[in-house]
Image (cartoon, rainbow, N blue to C red; front, side, top):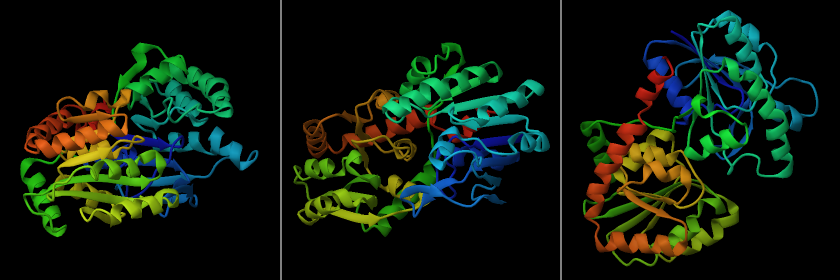
Length: 380
């Protein structure tokens, strides 16, 4: 099949394991002809969003990538919100996809994809949505944009869309209330990950622990990301410091924003059980998650949470509606520092419980988060 992934309403970043990368990678592995049409938005230095050059190249996920700059009409701050690009219909007409996967509801080219679908009704046209009340329409100007620009655009495209695939329960609610989308067109389609078989998992786990000089008696906590105040790394370290077990190890994987760097360094210096591993690529991070015993994410949401479940980690994560499907006998949902301290102490008292929780995380991941299965869903 010929599959076109549009990443014009969101970023597409090579060498990452975001949903866009994983689905493209699975479609390429399945022998399909895959094209990614993306904006120039990407990560610079693995830390902050920025822009690269337009052009065409073979991407890290095995598909041809075409990067398009924004339309040259109006100031840049407006162009990056409208998300219009030249030549999109011509690309569709030339590639002739059997399936269109449009990542992100909010962008002008949704209308172009809908127009192509009307002219070619046999094409399957899916749109995924990552928007929710935490990341969209959070200020007056953004609210106006979503209600009076994106909403009419989405409603005009709706008759041509087969399904809107929502990454979370909060996203589904946002699609209903902000965009007025009917229940029957919405489908839960969470961020997922790679689920290793037993042999691969234990091979990665043993290698990660050996290379990190961790023995079998140690209980390894891991928190990762681009750390700012919203990630609550400081709170995690404060809570961890309330434990006393010499067999506990806290791994920090990622980059720390200068706004919290001094406090993180101070707390780390007070506890020799805390280790900083720096930034790791997606494959290295996955291997470290296989080697960890529990994943920590008490702050803002991250796709690494789903990756951690796929790596069979019990979790200690923020108590938000979007996490509800993923914490069922395999960890803790926490909303305060006191709740996080309580969870750490419970683990210290009964560390053996983590084995059963690990098995439960594997079950949840296998049921909900297998990108191989999710990639096939888009083809029907």
